[in-house]
Image (cartoon, rainbow, N blue to C red; front, side):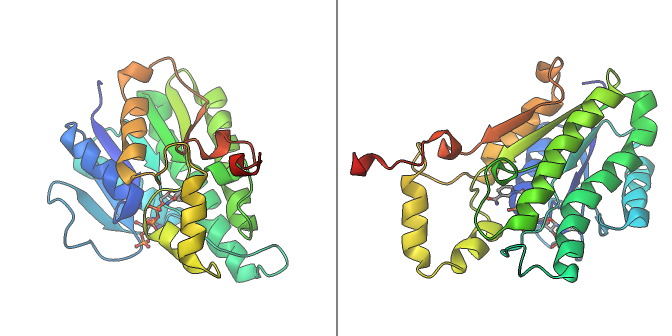
Length: 249
Ligand code: NDP
């Protein structure tokens, strides 16, 4: 790749951390961000800014800071996201602001800020969506909708900003991070809910953050030079399965 500098949002932990670690291993310079302070265990080669992608000024500051560090930015990965377990009926205005603010507006803010230069210099954007933007996880209405927004925005950027910019999304299924632990903790019987969920995966395991980092690494590489405007599911077969359960037939 001509340009080896990347911004990855939300690299303090989970999937984002796996992506930044993979980029560093692949020789890509990385700046990442989160709302908190720089995590003590973040690789010293990774640049950090404390910022909230939901805020337009912060998003522009993240891009400017990365340019100050590295010059031209060739890669943007929009990974920062928050989850909320509520139906429409119980979602408050504050909930809406938080979830749509980070997942939808945050992704938009970062794309808009990065595209100002990428339109000229070229680049690759990968947005982290979710299978729940395609099939609805129960009691996660606004989260599900926010991820459907991410998928649609991905296609629009590909169409409007090609051929200089490629833009794709990854749709993870259940990936073992704090976010997933939070979802199971809300079940009446978390252990039973986890066992049932595992049984519904053809791969009989949840995903690892590295599973998602592997797809992102391919999408930003020249191996994917003819790939744009697409959403790639990595869910261990969860959404390939019919809802009919084999044991009952
Ligand atoms: P985590 O909660 O483990 O990590 C989320 C990261 O995003 C943290 O670094 C967090 O840092 C950062 N972040 C959150 N809000 C903001 C903000 N406003 N500005 C900047 N950074 C922010 O989540 P996961 O690693 O599990 O998820 C990562 C992405 O993958 C999300 O977009 C999520 O929706 C998506 N996903 C995850 C799945 C899973 O099963 N885990 C399944 C499908 C999709 P901080 O809190 O310090 O700001």
